[in-house]
Image (cartoon, rainbow, N blue to C red; front, side, top):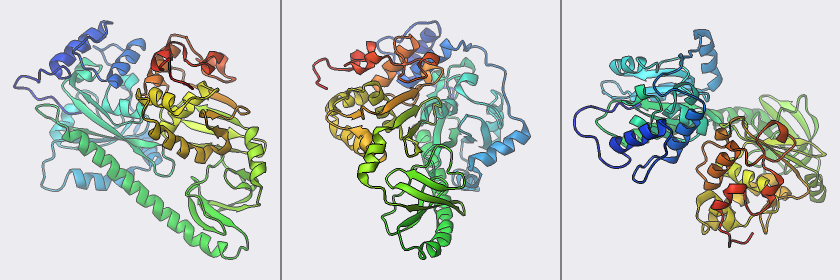
Length: 472
């Protein structure tokens, strides 16, 4: 949060306080934005969601705070405590007055640590911004930590962009910190401070702090891989055939007799005590636990057999957790899971809805509203094929027809890929909320789901995002 200072006339630009306050007041009374009122899509979507949830903009819900004992457990679970010293020493060097408050939350927006100027901390305490407090959107309305935690994207919420009126004198900048081992959010770094206006430096400072935290986590991961490698290398030297050792997240520590992939997709749970397992890209392997990872020895299944196994696959795209999409694949020989990137998740969702396939131009229009951005789309699909192999086909791009595809959506349609600003996804959320579509799969009866009509050239009212003359 960055407090809006008094004195002087606020900027008169449409997106500034005057235009923003007008847009806010209209939105809180059920009206929409008008020409000249620049409300960012993520803020407008958040306001609409919270109104549907019945959150009162004039009254915060009763504060939810974590018990001190539970707070310590949550701190250990994030793995972020080791990065705090470097954040503090960078943001608050001795003798320097840095007018900000640092807050670090877990992925569910529970504030675990705070630091900064004493006076500023007292001021944010007055609105319940303190250690142990739950700062999610559902609890305290649109805010930087809550929005970053829900969308897994950097978020700036300035002045009247906050849903609660009591927060309008502040601006908060929240940036997710991703665990380099899994790619999933480990928490959110938030910066707060007084200012006479909307200073872009605060966003850059928060981004730098989050990247610094990720650098520290990555260094710790590399050190752990090195420790595993010291155990693995002497062991691998005794094998006559190909073998590799990976850590608990699938990252390769050492390999012999084959080009070790940077990371293997592991099964949704784990391999238990090992035994014969089917591993993507390697085929059937003998798997044994080793230190903090796994020893894997391929048995040499032919590529034709791997392709045949892919044809019988069941793909499950799990989007129930907004901050943690997961792709699970099951076949006759085994199962594996993968956490796709935000862009790959968008592509998988669109391809799951359009089983007949989409051209690169149509995907570019759906993702960027720019059909000409086909080079970007093709590059992303090429990266995605490294994980899916024969399950991703081309001309047009589509998921293999023989594969069974299920999409598990969240209970609240607004939580479907909340970090996505793709035109197709925004329209899809609205159509799901109105009951016009259902997501595909066997769980259709228990959730909003995309009907078989999704195989056609449009997604109900989502057809507005497609050019009618664009060929599939």
